[in-house]
Length: 627
Image 1 (tube, rainbow, N blue to C red):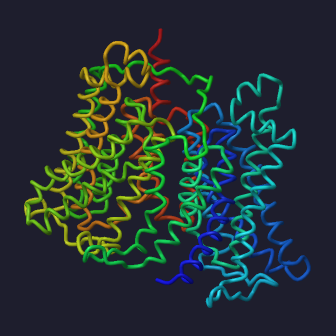
Image 2: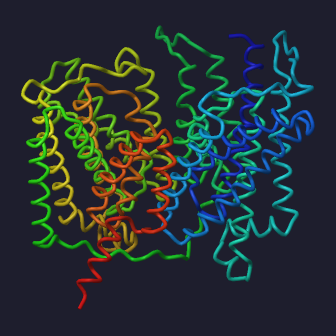
Image 3: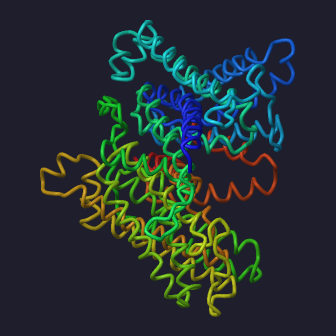
């Protein structure tokens, strides 16, 4: 550690902050006006760097390097406008979570479109003309291009600020951020305002990507990596606040730079690797800010929307016909292994479908009846999986007992995380759960001596009694059926009714003496325990476990399952889990562009069945049942 090294790392942090700000600024504008949590924003960043590579490579001689970068940003802005007009404009009145599902499907489509156009290899662009060298700072070399990036952030912030404060368009954008329904009531064409804002946000993301061309290669992993960082910046800075986004980008980037500078430090005789904290420092900051100031550093508490969604019908006890169909289905599932070979692919796939159904049902328990959005449910799935693996490997516990204890490990995690999470609501609660999940993932990923680090844990096989795949399938079927049945029983208990009362009206529930936050906290623990059971079953079915089971993509998969099936029906998560997992498996085995096919299918289902597959089927049944 040296003073010159610190200065250079802080300058690196400033350059990284400018890059983060460009992406986060667009995301903040889009959310502030449209209220869409746009998962595809990272895809616009990725497209920006790929388009810039092509324009510089083919037109750089005639057009010039810098005009090519600006043209790439404009092209991404046009792409954003097309996406808004053709897709998002059709679902603005849909529930917020279905909008999120549509943008996630768009991520899959764009990723495979980029794969088809540019291929799977990394593409490294040329150095920026005039900024190819380095300057000496305190005896150390610092890239000239990074100094240019340091200046870009404040310049873009100033230009966007002038646009928002000195033009009529900016006045409308700021008004829509505060109260978009009132802006529409005053006669403003809300549709074209949304299109313009979405295009501007996409342009900023594309510009951020294009400016990275001389610094890093274009890869297919940039989309999800970028959107995670952008969400952190937007939430920490405050939804809709551009100065807040820049402040948050500075804070996060400089903290990472300081961690890199510190390296490995002895603290009271214990070696602490601060450089490893870079994987989680942004999520630690987000968690701390959300707990202390939920609306962000420079944000303001959101005004409640006047739009009221479709009321949810009360849950009904299953009819005899429904129970008979469930019994027939259970008998059919139990008979399947008798018709197949011991380790057939069908048996393995059915185990995966059952585990996915249990995981999705546990997430639905807090999303549907409890009304709490969670982007980090994979944390409990992973805690259950790692708990089971470590109990068997390190303690020598039998598998059967580990399947009982592992859900308790996940429940303890839900007990801790839920205590903080239930104090928030809406997108802030979702982001806090995401932060906790990513912190858990980072610890698991880096704790080599305990969790196996990035390699995970292997040799986690079922006991001798269940070594045969058919026996393990029947065990999984029994435990999954028991878990789903128990969650249904809880929902029809006094606790379940109180939970739904708090979801429908916090004020009324509080007035009649229901402790809503306490009920939601217990719901988190229940859902975490069942999600942990799904994780434990997964670990023994695969014989190993890796940090990928806690990653954000696993949480997103759970969200897709719940929303695809229908959040307002109890059968929805099961239907969605089976549909998504089967589609994923079938499409991935038959085409290299499985993401585009899967994403297109999800988009089609969202547009045709905004209430979910099971919700649509229930509507049809109810209509036919009416005299």
